[in-house]
Image (tube, rainbow, N blue to C red; front, side, top):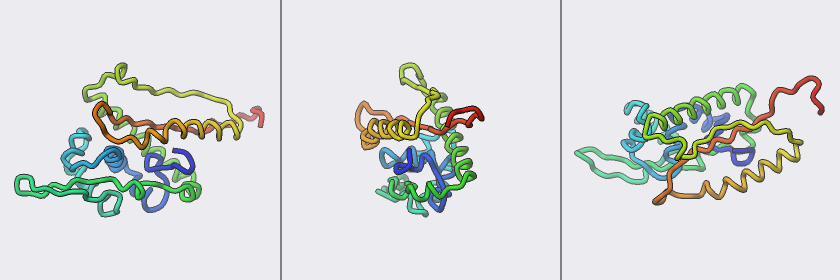
Length: 192
């Protein structure tokens, strides 16, 4: 999310981030962030992605240690694996994020937006009810000093972080929350 909490949703730099700078792999990570799933369940969760593509990217993430097998069972003569996300392997630390170049940020943001569009399209193609589901997508332009910006980030963390610990339970549905924060282009006559 911000500085110290930059997770795979904000993908940046080096090995793990290079691995995650792919829309399908990022969607798999999103899907597995709540509970373990089989590859067949992931295919159901990503209906717009071919089964072969899901299996291939699950294999890539498992080989890299981002996913681990949490169970196996025999189904019709084959072994079906259940995968769990290793959140510590899908996290980008603040130091790595700070070392990211402008091009790294450009690439990561592009993938993040492509992933967000794919997730939203899959939602709309399903049994969507945006009004009932309280779907929101707004942009607000706010004027902040550096200190006010830090206070806003702290407030957002305070609101969001406890909810990231929620686990799947009856009545709960996974939602994607994608805070995006950046300054606009500075005008020549803008005060400093």
